[in-house]
Image (cartoon, rainbow, N blue to C red):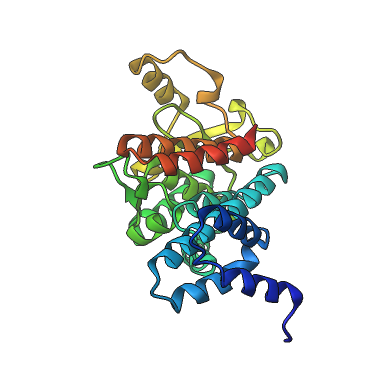
Amino acid sequence: MGVTPESSALTALLNLLDEPDEKAFDLVRSSILNFGTDAIPQLEKVQDNTFDTLIQSRIEEIVNALRKEHLYVDFVNWVNLGSSDLLKGFMLVTRTQYPDLDDVEVYSRIEQVKMDIWLELNDNLTALENVKVLNHILFGVHNFEGSPTNLTDPENFYLNTMLEKRKGSPVALGMLYIILARKLGLPVYGVNLPQHFIVAYLTESGLTNPTEDDVLFYINPFNKGAVFTRREIELFVRQMKFKSDWSFYAPCSNHDIIQRLIRNLINAYTQLAFPDKIENLDNLLKAFE
């Protein structure tokens, strides 16, 4: 492949990464950013071949800015195009912390769990039997579990760390449960219960615009997939002294789930006092406006 005018222009700009005048460098930086994520490979090549700490720090800042903008565009597209793929949304939020997230590895791990469940399912099983199989494989064979010791640890909310440690927060485990169930054709949806994310198993007739009336029963992935009824939710709401709301019982959208995930992360980073991470996550929330 020959040298294009674009690559030559980028190379010329990269030669100015050590520009001592900050105002002049701002122009260089802006010009590099105009190349978008296509500039990242060359930036990283320069970074690998220099010991100049100024150049290294400038490259790191530029690469982070490029990835942040690219991630935001991808996230806006996910929101605007129907957000039907919950796994995609989960991966995009995870990339705010892990920009080099390996898609292939994530899909491979989830596919392995899905296949192990699929091998135990058949068309003759009832809804409760389907859940029993899913619970056995996810929690009994693959040993996933809730992480109750530190509910606000950000690592409990990211997809890759949950898959590696097999531990997660209520919303993260709930999302994995939904993703696996839907891949297997099981009508499982999230429910935005305050202070605790749960899921619902729906009737077949409730797959279009589902409401609380379409719920067969509820499931708590954070408690190894324990099954319960609306009555238990009502008791929980009363004990917590919440004002009852229909949304505590009804299936919610992928938009709702991802917004909850982001807000949980914002809360976690607020407690840890990481303003930069909070700003990045707040920026994602703007995509829903």
